[in-house]
Amino acid sequence: SIREEWLADFTPSLSHDRVVWLGKFRRYKCAHHVLLAMKDVLAQVPGARVTLAGRRDDRRYEEYLRCLSMRLNIEESVEFRFNITEREKMELLRGARVLVLSSPVEGFGIVALEANACGVPVVASSGVPQSVVKHEHNGLRYPFGDIGALGVAIARVLRDEQLYSRLGASSLAFARRFAWHEVGSQFEKLVEVALARRGRVHD
Image (cartoon, rainbow, N blue to C red):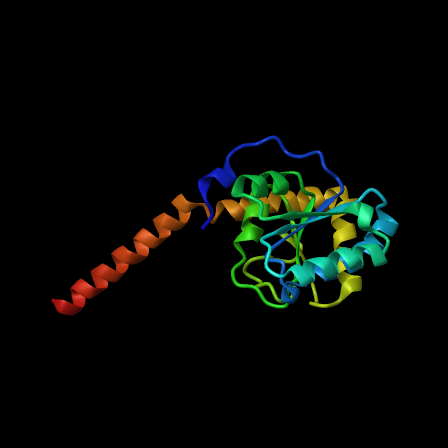
């Protein structure tokens, strides 16, 4: 479920160019895939910006990411934010155009729901469960490791206003299904059914 404050009314961002990656700074999360893809994205959307944010974990990997951005000559379009608070994460997502999940494997991915709750579609690798990001519904999917496909998906969300509006609206509706009061109510019903069945077994 997602906390109710994520679903509170807010003024939508007017950002048309902010790409966000969120997670632990570990190599297997593949934040570098986003930087590699941004090289092509910036050729199509020169004003695009990418923020890599999350918890510090591997300083060598962080340095690798900085060096990679310089090697790709995109460092002026890249921002790093470390150890952000929950409030800062919310503000970051509310100012984003798209969230990218680039890792080879993910669990349910609460951050995808948090982005959707802000009306932000998710570009997700094939390592993200289908139940979290549905293609052309609350985001776009691409084969993990396909940097070209990742770049195309990001650029589509940045450039196509109709696509962005449609995915954003669907994202909000999708996130609301996981509000605490919705999930709590469903869980309560399951418990009631289980208790009723148990009672019948013992009768």
